[in-house]
Length: 307
Image (cartoon, rainbow, N blue to C red; front, side, top):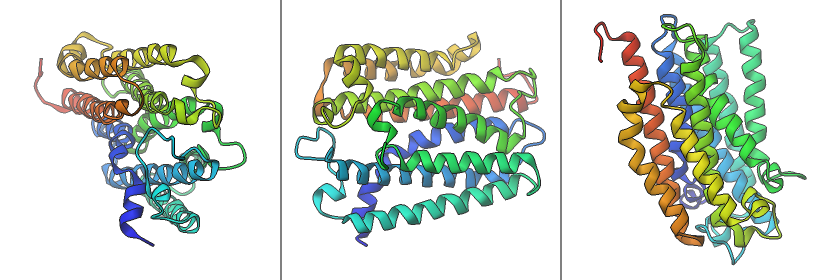
């Protein structure tokens, strides 16, 4: 199997988005007295494997359906260039399904007893994540082709990623200081909304090539409405990290120019010219999620007040 072509199809630039949730939830979990940080490395590895599995499956699905044709607005990957065959891509997908399962199983064995209810709940969640990763554009009725991609991205990249990783590390969803779920739930919703925004701007870019082949949200509501939707996703997503005044001044305001730059770029650009707005939003989301978790952890573990 051509290694260079396979790496190209992995779309490594998307990895920071898949890591935003698990890094946020995991680092926040370190603040809990009963935390088990040893499983975090496999939590991160599983998230990386799932993202690569998603990217490979999406490329194969788009190739088989004809979405990755000559009129594609986004970058061309290995199958479109002839670097990988359908058989080779299926083999790579199967390998990453196994890698996801093995990494996830090790993570759970390091965190929960085999006979615990949590272990088996996370087994089911992991199976659902693998299914979602492989059925966005693959299968008889891929959910990405009927406008359900936004919902699945919000659930898995946001809620499941942040809340799940926090529970794996800390064995609770409550803050040890406030005994409230809000400090964990707020960034979960925020990462979810910003992840949906990444998908949405990708779909706005590809409206012309997707037309007639699949029904994304931008194709259903139109370009202008999709850009309004994009603006709301970004604004509300960032606002979730500013649920108190300290958070607003600590990291939301310093990072706001990057998100504002993204929104302005989305309104001023269309088609292929939207492509630079994707990595800008991905990296800004990762930094915001990581910074929130680090400040949260420091506030709860530092022996003296930081404010």
